[in-house]
Each structure stands twice: as C-alpha cells, then as structure tokens.
Image 1 (spheres, rainbow, N blue to C red):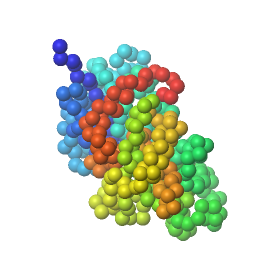
Image 2: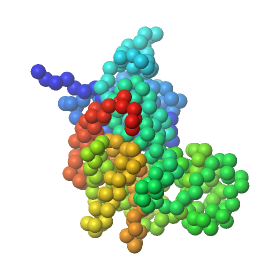
Image 3: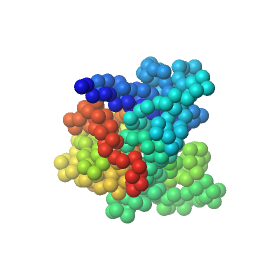
Image 4: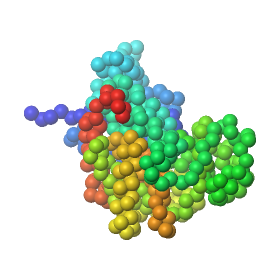
Length: 363
C-alpha cells in the first residue's frame, strides 16, 4: 500500500512590514518540498488580516520578486472554527467546506507571525506547525526580554536601554550618548529584517531614528554599537539540538539594513562557512545551542552574533522564523553543513509532528 501524502499548508503574507519577504520565503519552500511526500497548498494572509486559500500555488510562484500579490487572484476565504475536529473551513457560495491539513508551515515573518500570536492560535486549534511555540516565539521577538534572559544566563549581549513612546519627549540625547556611546543603534523592540532600525551618529540622527522606530512598536531599544564581524549560526531540533557551520555577513553598507538584505545586490556579501578558527566555531556553536534552550526555542532558529577583533563574542538576536528566500542564510548554512534544502524541510516537518501542540509547557 502506497502511504498517503501529508497535506502541508504553507502560510505566507501577513500584516507585518515583512509581508513581501514572507512571499519570497514561501516561493522557495514550495519549490523545494518533496512532491512525492507532500500535497502542498498555500494559505495567504492579506495585509488586512483575511485568511485566503489560494486556488493554485502558482499564484505565489509566479509573483514578481518582493511584490504584493496583484488582485484579483483566485482564492477562497478561510475561517477558523475552534473546538471542531476540523478547525479550518473554506467559505464558498454561503457554504462551509472542511479544509483538511496535517500541518502548517508558517512563513509569516515579523509581527503577528513569529511573535507567539499565530502559534497560540494554531495550538488552540490543535494544528501542528513548524517552529517554536508561543513562549519561545514571544521571547525572541521582544529584544529587551530576550536580552534580559540571555544576560541572566551569562551570554554576552550589547549594552542597551529600553524605552517606550511615552519616554521620548523627556529623553536626553546627551544622557543616552554618555551611557551607550556613539554611534549607537535605535530599533523597534519587536520587529525583524532590520525594519525601523537606524544607526545614530549625532542628535539629528537620534531624533529621526526615534520617529522611525516608534512607527513600528511602542517599545524601542537603544543599543551600543559593537564593532565586529557579523556571524550567524543555524540551529535545528527540539531536544536533540544541532548547529550548522557559522556564516558571515560582510557588509558593504553602514549596517545590515532591509535594503542591504533584499534590495541592494551589492549591499552585503554572504560568506559561508565563515573563516573562523576551530575554537571560535566551537564557542559560537555552543553559545547558539545554549541560547536556543534559554530562549525556549523549538524546531529552528537563526542565532546572530558579533565577534570583535579581540575574539569577544556578543549575541545580537535570535530569529525563530528565519527567511527562506534565495539569499537567506538559514537554509544556506545547512546546505553548506551537508543538509540539503529539501531534507532540511523534511526535518523541520518531522520536528513539528514530534511536538505535541496541546502540551502547555513551552507551547
């Protein structure tokens, strides 16, 4: 008897500023999922929050790079019916049709996708999903909370100050400069892909940076600039945790901005594996594993570091739903480490099924 294919729904789009990046990630995952093992569909979350089941995966595959889907496109509304055996239903012609899936592969980068909100919804609906649960997702999304936990675990991080929008009118540039030095970074506490992040060199920069960051979050992180190499390490697993060979981002710009990541082909060079001594590789991998556990991650995470000329290592941040675009480091680091893209996806799906979505601890 031929085993039936697993029904995998790739979830992309979303309400965050990383909407277009999510679509690019979905393209690559759809193309690399083994069609002999999986029956693949696409759930698209529009910018207004509507959930839509696309009639064809080609709608995503044929979409121009880093562009929104052009309406109209063939799709049907999806609704949740929590408490039902089949919680997702297709709404067509005033009728509800059950939408049966085995697992959701979420690629909703940023707010409402990797901050624990989506994970809570899927866990409540008893739908298995790839990646970290509610707690790990929420912790890693909040840069202040994650830094506090990392510090408590004796994992070095850059010096920082956390403020809210209400602090801005009385915030003194000179006091911040004396505390953190110059240059410094201003960033939303909850955002990804370097969206809303600014490098500050003077008071004029500071005011503009605060104005930009508060467009994306009510909490803002002010952070000292660490002069060093930007090193990343991919982590994979639930309890048996594996790390990839580290990769390096060699910048051609002031910092690794959204434009340098996705729009400017000359913004950065990705060097993987990074040219590091064996002892540094070992230290980075050990810190990545430790951070993965401390922050409550499951399934996967990309852990980002700075390595100074004096070989000091500082953890920058952990990303629980890293990019899967053509230039994304997470899958590429695994490819270089000997785990092919399609096999990586198989492993992530296996890890998702391995976890119990109803298990409260570490949801």
